[in-house]
Length: 286
Image (tube, rainbow, N blue to C red; front, side, top):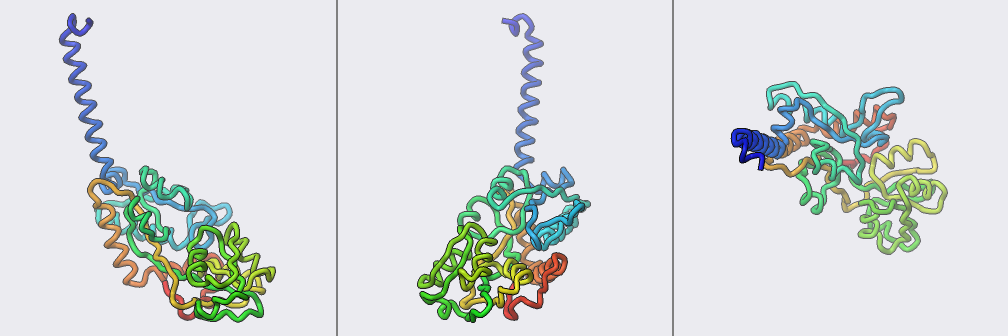
């Protein structure tokens, strides 16, 4: 065999192989700390979802990302940079509601802001927050009196349009079991159902409802039914080896929310995307 004739070459090959193995182990260890990865890279990869007005969007012909989770992400990166003692750049990575968890787990994205907090998601990734809590709202057609309690709305005659697979659909099934629940393909279809008079109300998020009311006068009013139905929205980052990145973001999120920055960023974004925040219910929370 060749290595018997050239023991020196064999030994050199072993040394090279050992060095490569050591380097790979070192890389694996480094990649098990998001904090160290970001610090070494100098870039934070932030998830965004295209064409989600007020949340994530770009003006025609512009590369600039707008929206309140985008603004929150910039604030988080600024805070990270200060803690790391260096200027960090942001690389925006497009994702979707369905793939964002996988993109975070794989390391394609360092963090993403805007997922509802659920026990299943908390097992898959680290969730930092809550960053905001926008309650389910009921938006009614012209001529329909939208009561501010679930009990008053929960009648066999009430026709309720919801988007399938959403927290609003879950709220309808929980609070309005006696009503006529119409589960439709998406939020736009649910809103159209009310506009056409096929349904009396739609349950949706406050921002989606506000946008719908702005473009259609047949949607007359919006209320926040009581008791409050709301799921906190968090940021997500992967479950790495040391948890340092998550620990920092959780402390940042707690302070950020307590200081009222969430409400500030949401109202700014509503103005940027042309919505009138004065039409929000007076008892709206963030």
